[in-house]
Length: 496
Image (cartoon, rainbow, N blue to C red):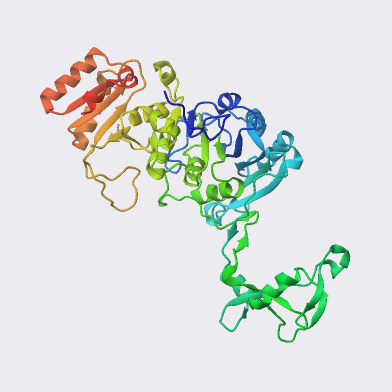
């Protein structure tokens, strides 16, 4: 088999790992990653049952952190490993909110070293009406914090980013206009610090003014020819014209209030409760990496960091414990980035692979119920429900290849196809019984479905008999699928 084209001699890239990030990080060599971004969930090991829908239901996290200290204890060994795999010239960003940011900062100072702390970045993620309501006794919690550390070298990668100048800044700082109408501001040409000769500043005459200057005489003469040097009206010293149309903008500071959060109507929204916007990760990746550098997200959720890295021509590695999240981010890479999933395209250097998904019945039995449902629906090529509330016995939908989307008003949590879909019901039990099938039949009749799919580890003889009787009586087809059949890919003929 051909050997994969590698961005690094130390590590493979363009891989999503499904599993505990601590286990995967332990396998990675020292100093192999250029940029790390993590957005770990507070008070959770992300062993969650619900992938979407925090607004419509209580998010059912399997809480393993009874206190902030427990959360920090959970994160500490992971941050130790992240610091180990980071290159000395690399950068690390820890995204957190008000719950534990101060405790995390102390922990990171211990792991990376206080001298490696670069910035505390404040991202304004919402407006006050979302948090501080009438009767509340606190100021609105409007921001997240990103703690930025370098890998230990003063030569860590840095590409200054800029934001456009707003109208008020332009009016106040670029109030001058030349004869062509170009806006400009005056800049200083005199040598700094009192223009002492010991600083090495050149001494000569400019427009009849003798002194020490910031630039060589040759450079100054060039500025004069270009019309960039003049003595302002009422002034006595030559000054430099800084033109607005040549400005890069204002350097990005440590307060980011120009990047909007994801809302339910946003084009990139996946309905994932903590999804971060692409522009946020775009800024981080542009600032702290170069093309072909390796970006790692060890809590990658719905995959915003790896999608941004792919679009910016970086190599990347993603890790998440949730099989559903891993499948969703794989689909997102295929849809948003147009890259193929699979061993062959990955070996050819233009695809990606997903490793570590559950491959045995034993592993699947240990999944939380909603994760198991999502796994089964996605494995069948269907669309999982975004919420367990009001699902009326439908855990997912399979849309035939010929179905075409129809946009109808606000998003309802499902793709709006023209009433052309098959329901999927999933039961995480040893044997689905007759009552389970009876309930599914009622749902099919209620929704006027001619065909449906039912997934379980096995089916009782009564359940299979009822499926046959239901077809003879109503003409409606229920396809029973076992987990083993799905794992062994013996379902193609049943999905037809």
